[in-house]
Image (cartoon, helix red, strand yellow):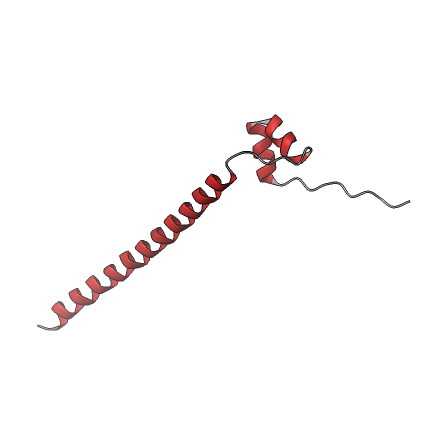
Length: 79
């Protein structure tokens, strides 16, 4: 007799269940998707774009600090 594999429940699903057990059941058991999928996907795209902008600003901040240190070194050593 073959053993039946239990379904994998991810941490995000547990969070969804804690937030609203009915919504989790409708998605997991009934196979329904909540309304507003396009709006959610747009929000995810906006968050990803913002994340890239934040990473870019951090890189520019580091570059600015290095350039300021280089300028200070040139001023001190140039005397």
